Length: 319
Image 1 (tube, rainbow, N blue to C red):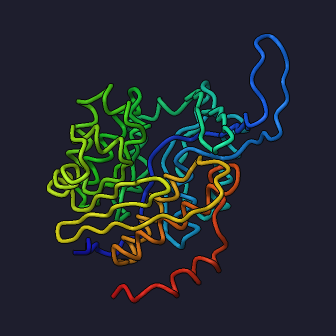
Image 2 (cartoon, rainbow, N blue to C red):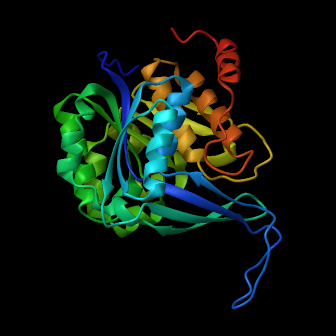
């Protein structure tokens, strides 16, 4: 069963954090307390939920973005980056708070650990979301549990979801991290009840359902959402709607940095919905696209558009 949506100006509005990623490889270096060590790689990359927006735009989607940054050079540069990637930005610039930063430590296996300074993100207000005027022009609204840390941003996200429901806009929710679900069960429950589509990894799905066995998890989520995507890392994903369950294997690649893989997957899911791709094609494209991202440092190692077209050309018709 496909989610048939009316034609709107944008495929999706992404609402979420404005963050810059400071990525440091710890493969050959351990911190020396009070001393100095050297690493073989460090870099600064645009991150946050702009990852989802720019990935969707790269795939060919029409997308808008709502967020908050500082009125500093990082905030202004983030805004320029969204525009350069053909994303319509509504980024409010705070006069007093800085743009958010994340220090990402990447180990020899490509797994990462975060230290986050949220800056202006937490102060996005419900009024600012309403003034953006983007949600009712979109077929989908994408929100993340990472934006539910504190109010007023938490209230802004909930209001955005409520506004979307009133306007007939489908809400796509990515919980962001299983520990957030456990620490804020009432807030997450409220947003889950407003969501039509869930994009979660296995640990998040376990936390939402309270189940351990994958069959029980799928059965519960299937009853609750129009579409559920359960991400299984390099094992692929499971896509579930009211009439079908599809398990799609992953792609084996050399992993350098897993930062942004989930964002790339979510963007591809939105693209697949907007293009009415079959569950099988959507799952294969999402797994492949996310696998390309982890082959380098940073969250936006997107494959060339020509390679995306070649990939889809090999897929069976989705009609």
